[in-house]
Image 1 (tube, rainbow, N blue to C red):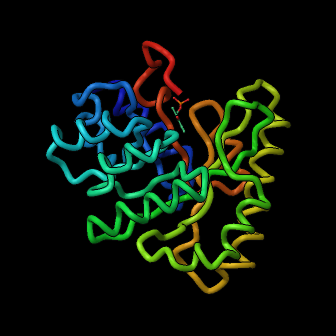
Image 2 (cartoon, protein in one colour):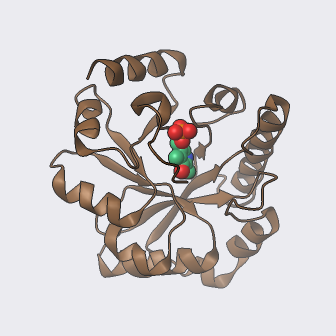
Length: 226
Ligand SMILES: *Cc1c(COP(=O)(O)O)cnc(C)c1O
């Protein structure tokens, strides 16, 4: 408990009060989540649908569960009844399937559009023109069970701080463009999810409203799972 508590309060002290902290608990046991919850942490992020569903079923606490990882359409059903926010909507097809599952569960699901901002080929996400194309389409306007709450991005895994800053800056610029083009008078479109353990301070300087932090809270993961 000691280390998790210390890590969370250190992070909370270093981020502005309006920036939300998502504690990324992927691969970590329920006990770690419960420890963090007992330090007033309410938002937890996972990157695999079945792992998140299992933890949701086992941990009986009022947690806000956020999905961060690439979602296959056939896995949406595992999280659709309870997920609070899906950060990783990376295609129109996926958004349509999330809408269907939300409808089946008689709810609306909050979503962020994941934007491809990195120079790596392995990262998922929309391009700028794909986002504008989707938001302009009639098909999009007929999706009544999803709410677009903002954008999410992951910077390149590099030591080059200027590059990371540039990528976050590009995401914030795109957010402002989408906001003024489509969501000007819509207060729901308000989140820029960017920043992880290694780069969240830069992300906040560039306008992040939500940081997703795993290893700086829970320690290194035993094996790499993106
Ligand atoms: C794992 C993960 C994080 C957290 O990474 P850390 O470096 O451990 O803070 C954040 N965002 C996404 C999408 C992730 O998959």
